[in-house]
Image (cartoon, rainbow, N blue to C red; front, side, top):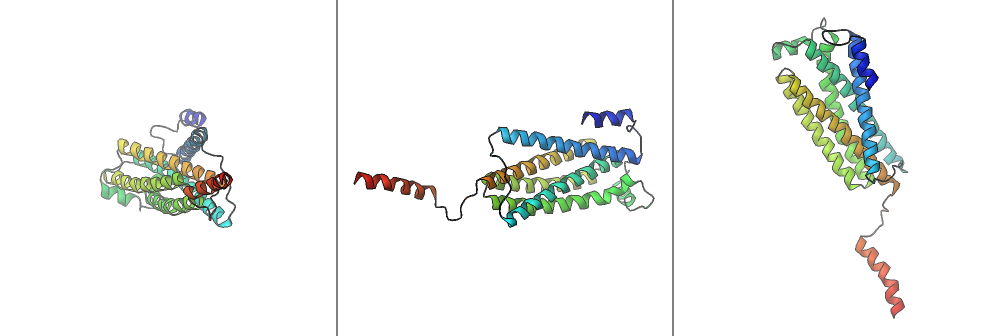
Length: 229
């Protein structure tokens, strides 16, 4: 992370630099930031006492886990495209909303500007992927915490879409871009946390025929009663 940040400065990919290399570098910087946040999240979750994650034994459950993995990749792609789009909004700020919308369709526009068309599409696809795969994995793992986190991820994604629309309407002010980035980080952290909780649930699967705890208590007390008789 430090080297990527230093590289932006040392290679002079700052200020009014409009090179494609700057876009790639900014995107890579965002990807590395997400990976770092993911590592922090994994450390915090495991230190808090969450069980060791395990791969699901059922092929169907494994498929759901793979779907969440694909959704996490979508988050990375969307975040990276968002960072480059924000760079384009900074370098080529539109004077009005109409001009900004027209610029993204201009074949002669800078690639950073044309990305304004694709970033929202990536965001919508990512929201759908997380909203479908997250609850499915949480249900398969029978983890209540994973289910709550899956719901939180969906709500955060919907909020993020709303903030994204507001960001466009307000012509991408810096303050709104920071809020947009903060919510993106929360989505990533929550999605990684949800995945870890679900995988921890697979380490201790709940048998389908398991009875409520009261029933288990009664079965444990029966031998003691029979001995007393």
